[in-house]
Image 1 (tube, one colour):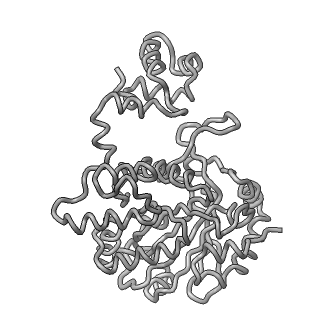
Image 2: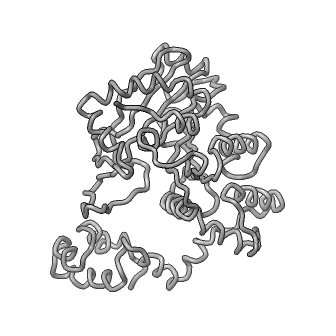
Length: 372
């Protein structure tokens, strides 16, 4: 029997969604009786379960929609498109590796509650245009890994949350709008309420400023609250946030102004926003950056520490090659030497690379170009 854990639902889902749990649960039970639903459920119940997908295949998200007081229904599943925005691994404990353009996605549950009159009217007339005028209350979208609701293994009171807030309109719905990655040791909803107040009171932080500008211009029809992970380990929380922000650093839609995790703390210290003795909570970093921006309105934020460090070629090479899934300096040089007489497949097997694509990117010069 498929059951949505009531304690976790009421802890994580926005309050307007609490009363919808029984509807969502019943629809999910029926959906999981389908062939695809049964496979999705099998992966969703695993702590680290993922579904491997390629462009054109279904995204493993069960997307529920509530239009006003009408019954909840399940939207048709979307399919993966090339360029799908995500940061993920391509290595697994099983030893399998992803093929080109293949992604490993976590099964998710998503609920979209629409209450705005303009959006409801548009839905009633089948209006799917990119811009819906006079939206005052963007639809509230909430999603999270299904495992957290179907097979939870932690207690809400000890839960630290890694989250994203995504917003926009039209074709960017529901994942491709502007986004901000954050962590909190409290309820993400309390932290979101603080973000909204800061936005409404003129905060200069990029996230708050962009949301304010887009809302005032009528360009926000949805706000997606995406819980990415739950943990009781603050070090793991910081590490995952740092990895996510770094992975999206060149994305023009990213609204984080400083690196994530411990790198963000180093950045604050190196730019005199944080003393060595201070140990702020994850939620407090935004306040420090906001205070600095208010005190230095004409300077703007100092360049992130990564951009300065990367000018040091020795430091840069250490970062490029310093992780378990990266090639060593010796491997990179061997690839270039062997490329004269061997195929990428043969080189990958010979030097122990992840796959031929990793080798091919080195040969083409698209990766590891700083190593000579």
